[in-house]
Image (tube, rainbow, N blue to C red; front, side, top):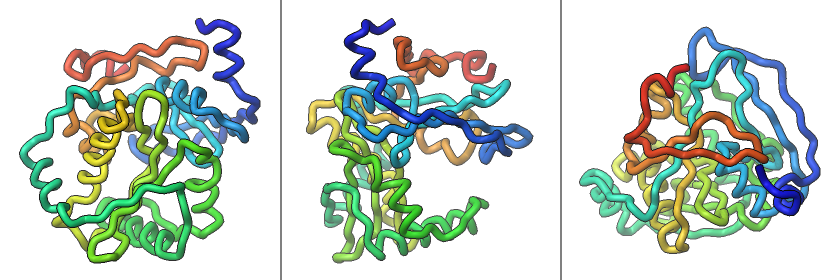
Length: 260
């Protein structure tokens, strides 16, 4: 348990709510329900604490699953100090030798919206994602609002064209991967992989220990790519803010712990 002074920092004033459960987008015949903590004034201390406990941030809301009878969503993080690049990852880095990257506060221009919608139309056609073009208002609410001083965007340019936007939170102990989208017309550059490799390098340069990857579901193809970034740690359960999180090495996980 945390002491009272810690709790004053970790639990800001918020509006807490859940939506009605609905069909899960990842597991057939399952229903999903998410808990939302909507916070106006957020400290980096709070954002770090909830990332350590497997929560995700979108806009002003911090969310985590409350799915009845299902605990398939597992939180992963990359061990930055012990990371070893694979041969294919080094090739991706080399192919992006001339890719220009800038980091700044999250922004919203017409090229952001066009690229976001192009990426999601591609994923809908290739992987069956549900897709409806995002409006500027929706984009603002999901990715601009609530970023505070720790939310950043990494912009990737090839020949002066915006080809990838990677939204992250830079926290006290690591980088939390919020969302990434890229131009599918540049497959040779492996932009999804490269953007995550750059997060690892950025965390290392900043002296941070982790890259928080969000959720992973065993056997789900949408999350398989996360398995390629070892060494990883996996979070036990869904700890509350007042509970101490327990992470274990990916190599020590047991099948019985992944499918309850």
